[in-house]
Image (cartoon, rainbow, N blue to C red; front, top):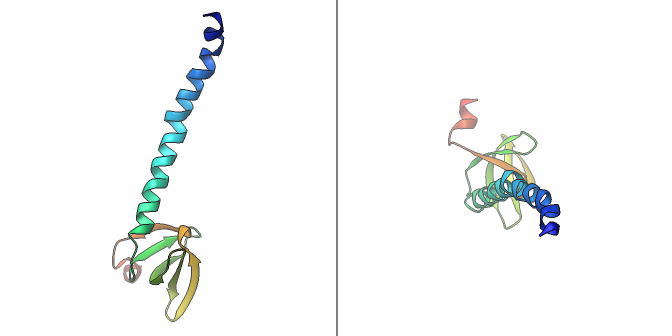
Length: 92
């Protein structure tokens, strides 16, 4: 019983750490994965570098995006940060 009381603060800290940090991070990662899986040609996105681009083609791990008229770059899909509403690029 005395040994349990010695470890009780560590157990409480771990439980708080799980609910305050680990669980929300796992939820955010799951949402990001589902967003990446739902991407399609023509979607407008923001890359982790802050570049706004339009997707021209997709593969399992890479995407070719257009960042300016006739300027395409090949990126890794996980660098896509946010999916933008249609027409965002034209409105900027």
